[in-house]
Image (cartoon, rainbow, N blue to C red; front, side, top):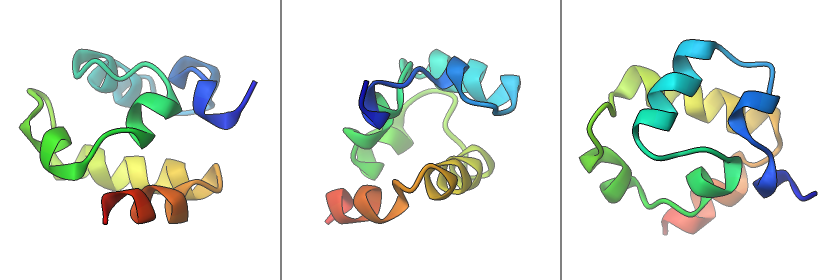
Length: 72
């Protein structure tokens, strides 16, 4: 299983974050990694507090640099 296939529920993260992500149709790290920020911002439930938490999670998972590269 690659890190992109990991379900958000399998990570040791806040359940409210996971619920909010699921509400936006994001179930795995791969779902998040494949999103462009403009599309993510359009999703109902998106806010910058959630996004800041997302960036912290990606950093802990070693995926922040890749996520940033994909945004270019």
